[in-house]
Length: 313
Image (cartoon, rainbow, N blue to C red):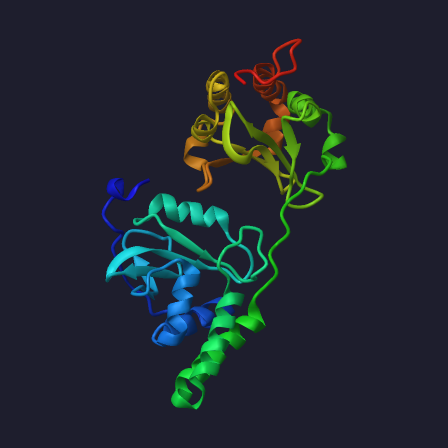
């Protein structure tokens, strides 16, 4: 969304009820205070990609349960948001902020300097704080101590980035269930052809993901079916599938919506913030052949019979 088309800025007011038992919140309070020290805040703004006149404050947003750690102001006008993490980025949360808040600019300030997305880090903020404290020396002892306090808070509490999921075999416990292998058989065909990958968060979970391509408009891959708890599966809403799928896959979206309406009529009221629906494992077992039929329609459009190439490529 460009600046000209953004809605009016989200209305907010100062937030003063931080839970200081959480180290992330203690760091936030210290960072809020140290912006008043020019020798520290100017290079910090450069790190964050902000102008020299930028400033921040903790806020709550009218009509929203979402609460980024800071609202950013430039030239005394709302200019975006900052979300602070002790470890790696919470990408799902960042995307929710971008979709719901205005301005839609969200800066992710992560813990370690060595992070896969090369984002600004608290570790670098601590370095800037120590450098500024050394420059100030005895000329402003309170400012020096506040900066060293911030640096120590960060050093004591940042975490290594959580390792990214990687392709794994489907768990044995699922492969031993005839109804499961029957339901996802077409997806396993796509896995063998290189269109689908199982990339879960741990070795005992499932995340069958469709790789991006000419007919799949996503970053990296799109989760078709996920399981972390043995009692249920997570699947995308038809709206989310429609957002991702291009021709010739649009017909699959209609088939998917028809299936959900048959087996789970209240699905639309149960979608989570990530546009995923929780389907009981027993429901998938009962309707395994119907799931297989929809997945077969997807497979047959991606792998036209006898060609082995992506339809629409």
